[in-house]
Image 1: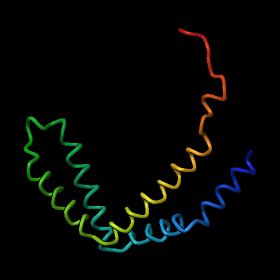
Image 2 (image 1 turned 135 degrees about the horizontal axis):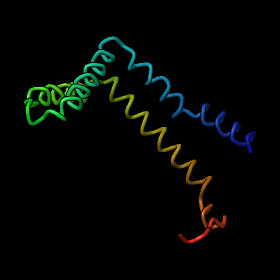
Image 3 (image 1 turned 180 degrees about the horizontal axis):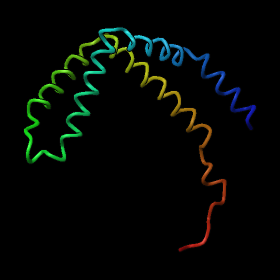
Length: 115
C-alpha cells in the first residue's frame, strides 16, 4: 500500500495544479507581499490577545486597521494568485480523497459495541 501511495504522491507532484501552487507560494515571499501578510497576522494576533480585555479596551481602531489590511490583501495580485492556486490544488486533493475513500465505510464493517 505504501508503494501505491508513493506513486500517487509522485503523480500529484507532477500535476500542473500542484506545480502552480508551489510557484504561486513563492510569490508570497516577495518583500511587499510578505510584509503585508505579516502585518495582517500581527494585527489579528493583537486583536485576539486583547479580546479578553474587550470590556476595558476599545478595539475599534485595531479592527479598522485589520479591515484596511484585508482590503490591501484583496487587491494584491500575488495573494490572489496564491489563493486561486491553493483552491485548485485543494479541489484536486478533495477529488482524490473521494475516489480513494468512496464507499469505504460501506465496505468495511466498523460496528462495535453500543455504549
